[in-house]
Amino acid sequence: MTPRGHAIAFRIWQYCQPLGWNCTLAEVADALGEPIATVRAVIKLKNWGGRLRMTKTYYRGSGGNDYALSVDAVLYGSGQRAVIEEYAAAAQ
Image 1 (cartoon, rainbow, N blue to C red):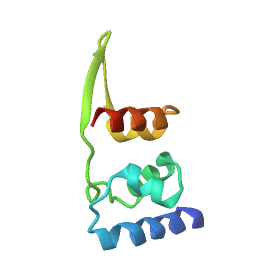
Image 2: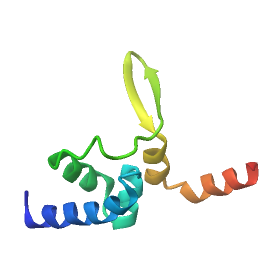
Image 3: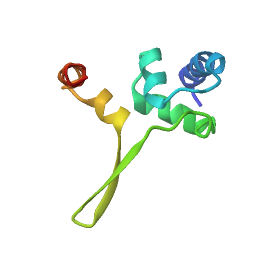
Image 4: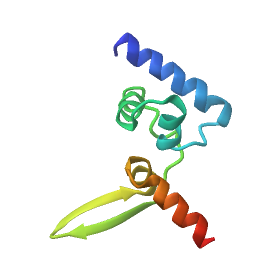
């Protein structure tokens, strides 16, 4: 792992440890200001994947190809995030 990877690993640990690792990948990435892919890669290298809280995953089939979409990944990766949040607030 590179020095940058070790630094990110420390920051992940520093954020998650006081919370008892009760946070999602998207929450960690957002708190650290790092891309989800970077945080995911570091967590995988450190074998910390089982520590984080999992998000609800919805499975969808399309033409024989099955794939999963995480609610957090969709919302955090969406350019329509503000519109979704506004719509959700209005629905309540």
